[in-house]
Amino acid sequence: MTRLTACPDAETVAQRAAAHLARQLRHACEQRGVAHLALSGGTTPGRTYELLGASPEDLGEVQVWFADERCVPPQDSESNYRLAAETLLAPAGVAPERVHRMEGEAGPQEGARRYAKELTARLGGAGAERSTVPVLDVIVLGIGPDGHVASLFPGAATLDAGEDALCLAVLDSPKPPPQRITLSLAVLRAARECVLLATGASKADAVAAMLARPSRRVPASLLRRERLTVIADDAAAPAGPRP
View 1 (cartoon, helix red, strand yellow):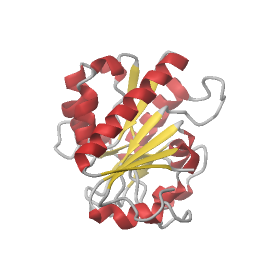
View 2: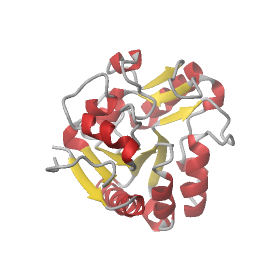
View 3: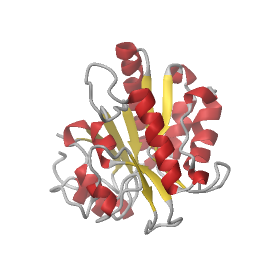
View 4: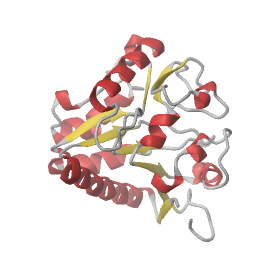
């Protein structure tokens, strides 16, 4: 069952999300000695990263990954890495060797190939789960008004990639820039938890559709419900009983 927390406003969403992430990262470190956290870009997570970055002690044993990236240089204003670096990584003093950046400047195919190789080398088949799909502890996700997560868009062929596909090239994103790199649905579903943040009335229909029946028209609805935590403000959260 999806865990849904509704908050009065976007600031409270960020506060709740930062506190939840800190708890989950501490738990992962206590259980396994390390935590693997994947970040998304977009407008919603930035404040959460600022709050999380204000407590560097919660990130001491954390390895930082990314859910997706635009095919731009890391210093570009559209880079997800740049957002994370400015709001979280630099303020918290996360060591560069613990940050696993998607190399958007390498292009979608080569960037995806390199990231899949790094995921496999560091996480593939490790631990008691012995999964062939790398298992991240927590993936932070936003949601688009169309229901997309990471750079997995409605009806896209990337949704049909098999379990062996870990990181995918996106050549025709409906949102600019068109070329991107994204974790596959298999990796999102394998994560111990996905934390999805949603704020604003423009996300309300997407959140409602995500919580309805799974559909390729709403990629967020394909996440594993029992491993999904949704933190939304009242404008984005569905009315009526909470799931």
